[in-house]
Length: 255
Image (cartoon, rainbow, N blue to C red; front, side):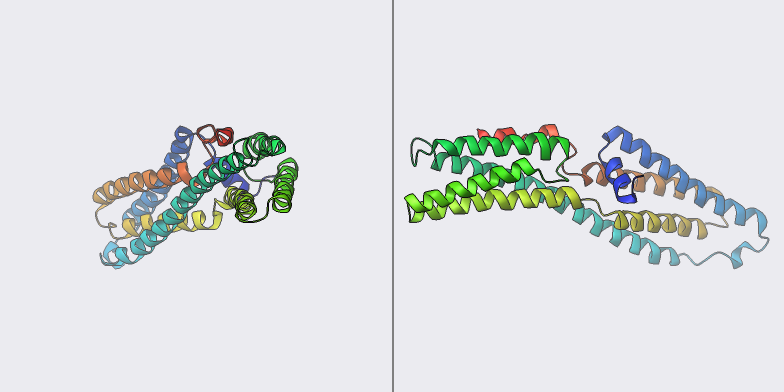
């Protein structure tokens, strides 16, 4: 049975159209609940003004919602930028290591084999099979081979060249760690739950300040539900930075 986090990862891995349908359904449910509250109070209460909060009350809840949504959006876009940065830095480090160990410089034929083995393991196992949520033993072994080559280079060619080889292997390892961490932790279920719950409270607050004007309240709720649905959807389609795996191909690291 899937956990809440796994369900969230599954949803944010779906196509943009499917996510839009899911968030639209959520928006309709929230709209229905808030409109139901508005209709219930308006129909059952003979002294509706005694239940209705003053207008500025709505701003208190909507401000909390706006802040939570803004911070959540900032986290999502930060993860996306970090994922893209790690991908580009990994490619740069691998290409420079290939040039350093190529025929034009150190001429270490084993390096090309080890680099390709690492990239293929990342592509087939970590990237495609596990969606960057789990490390590959094959990639780990290939990374150890790269480190062993750097040690050999340091033994045979000490000095700045050895330092550069170690630095490039360290960059490869660091960007892999960054990529796997982002793949495992990009979705914050508790934050999403808090944002959706406070969004519901915001709809109820709008309904509360329109208890004496049900038609105006219905229009306000419809506009708010549409706006929040678009906002949630625009964040949901970028929550998983590796959702479009075909647009970021690790095999391009080999040049």
